[in-house]
Every structure is written in C-alpha cells, then in structure tokens.
Image (cartoon, rainbow, N blue to C red):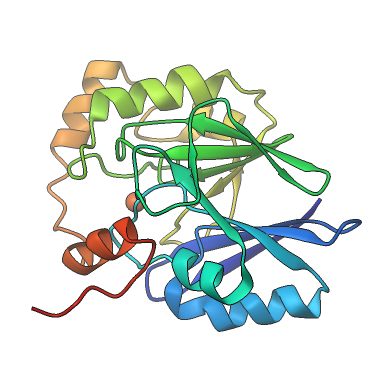
Length: 230
Ligand SMILES: [Fe+2]
C-alpha cells in the first residue's frame, strides 16, 4: 500500500493519500478544499486514479474537498450515513471499501461527533478526530458526547493490536503518527483515568468554538459546496 501524509497548515489537518500501486487506484481521506490542487497534482505525478474520497466526519474546522474532487475526477465520495447526506456511499460500521487491492474497514467511533468514523487498512488506522497523538477530539458540539468518545476509544480502538499505527486527523505540535499501544500508555486524557474522570476532564476544557464552525459545518453537510451568502 502506498501511503502519503499531507498537511494543511491553516487548519492543522492531515489528509492521507492511500493507494494500491499495482492497480493505480487511490483514495483520499479528509482532503481540504484549499489543498485540492496540491493533492490532484500528487495523484497525477504518481500515475494514480482517484477512485474514492473519504471523510472521517463532518468537519467543523475546514471545508472538505470531497464534492469538488468528485466533480473534477468522477471519484465517489463516502462518509458516515449519519453525516453529510450528499455522499455517494453512506457508510455503516463494519463496511469494507476496496481501493484496488487495499481494503479499508469502516469502524464507527461516535463521540467527537455522532458521525465519526475510523478507517483501518491492515495495521494502519486513520482516526480522524476520535484519537489524536496524546489527545482526542473535543466532544462539545455536533452531537458530541464525552462518554461515547471514551467508549469508542477504549473499547473499540484500544481493542486493536497495540502495534497498530495511529494516523490522526490533526496535530497542533508537529507530531505525525503514534500507535495504539503508545496512546494506551501515554495519552494524558485516557491513561490511568476512569470513564468518569475522562468525562469530567472533557467537560472542563472550555475551548472556544472552532474558527470556521459556522461556515464549515453547513458546507461539509453539502460535501464542500460553498454556502450562499445571506
Ligand atoms: Fe472534527
């Protein structure tokens, strides 16, 4: 499997290019609207065909490139059935997606948002905002629920083999990846804390709303279409 990690500095978002070099089939996970030229150029340079565009959830901090990439390349878009109604393939827990010879397993991990998904390809796990390196996504809007987030991380993701590589949806300190075992041991929001302690901690974060919440959420529910000014 070919894997590239791409970064959007403005929103600290990671986009992942996953491809099967033999067939040339490729998928993008969490592409950012402003970075679509960069991503398409890379796909072309690597002689790949974009077949699938995946979003881990309806993002609040950037606008997805999914709709634009679908229009430009004919790629199919996929995300949770509980998220944007505009996707071609509404996904449920346990679904399997094929990108050439690469198989991506869909794992529902509600909590950051009610539509959050992770995607697993063998021992590589794309965690969106559910599990970050030494952190996790907030759970205070878009039907987020700290208890549900704790269950998704500790009962679902932490049940995966400890050597599973974690590729997060964001990082704000320059870290690029981790492992499930590392996060079990060192994630300060989870290690040595009870479910109740985690919920209390998440409820006390007091974070300001994401900068682009009012624009990004409606746009992303329309697969990245620019909202009409009113
Ligand atoms: Fe998010």
